[in-house]
Length: 348
Image (cartoon, rainbow, N blue to C red; front, side, top):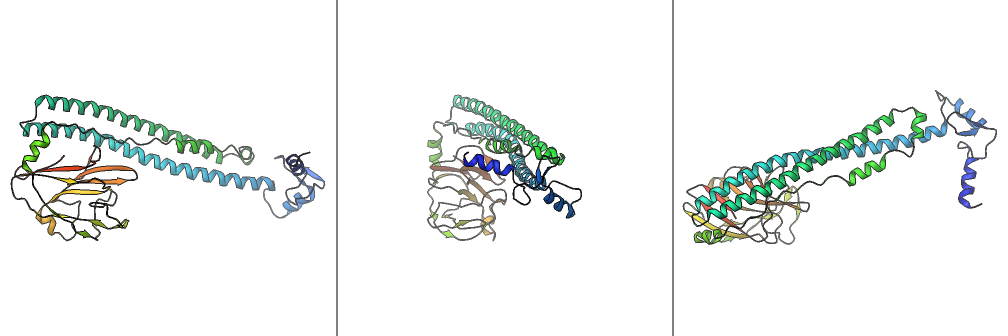
């Protein structure tokens, strides 16, 4: 007889109270067996109603298991609901962005006479086509998250029903707690869609913009100062990622560089190199904002393009007001065109 078989055989002949071989064994309703003196002594110690000592121990194990699974499932359900709300809001925001971008493209082609009407038509058609594809992906993502949320609710209902079963039925369920379904649900959580429109090249645009080239120098001054940015955004590192910079929210160290030139009229174009930067903000501010002591980046008087890295994803925004920009992160030069008299600042 091998050791495993011998161990099982011995356990079948051992009283779980005294841990010795049965003496005058008795089997109760739940199927567990004990020494008659051990069981009598156990029941005399005041258990009301009389219960199986081994079943009580197993009940505690099972209840702990159920509680842990339910807590894990509830947390998963809350995370799923947050993701679902974000995805639904993203869908509406993206649709509004595509509509606004169409208007911006039309205005751009109207303002620059060198640009061809045929290119404008192709540009708008490409935007319409790609926008519809991404909108469909977002709607399908919302549907998947909704279905996954319902699946999590169903597993939670199963666990709740199991908790209300009589002790004997609950013990029979030992080992059948739907843990595998909970774990598989966690592994199969739908990933959110990252909506990014392609950057459509406009022939002749950069050449036209460079007619208004402005040569400005930035004062490369390191500032160690905490500024309020956007409460719903990640803490911002403004400017190039310098070596040895301690980036621990909410007290961030970052670079803030001011231009050496102010503009009071006319049209001006310049470029900023953001290659190798993870978190940055570029733009303009008016004199009143520059005089403010708090220099809040989410206030009127400052106009920015911001890139913020969250986990492995880059997010672009413009301010003020804060608007997401659903395009890919620039990898090199970012152009800025200021039409002072027209009150327009554009990024290219």
